[in-house]
Image (tube, rainbow, N blue to C red):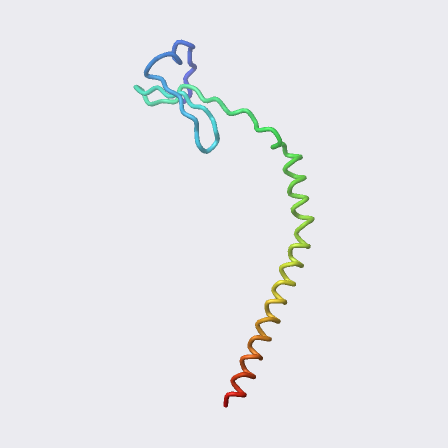
Length: 97
């Protein structure tokens, strides 16, 4: 339940304000009744419009195939290096016996 506040309520010593760490809203709380007297939403941060977020996701989506190809090539390179090391080790063991 929200209570309508008067300006004098804000100056009252029993009323204090906190900022929500999750949403950034400022809450004015009456310490005596332990109720929220007022809630003020934060102003929107610049650059967080739906269009800018959609554009950012589109750019990420466009770079994904290149990243997948690079990861695949790296995996194949490491696999080839591991096979070479294994064959070298087998040859060394064969020569020792």
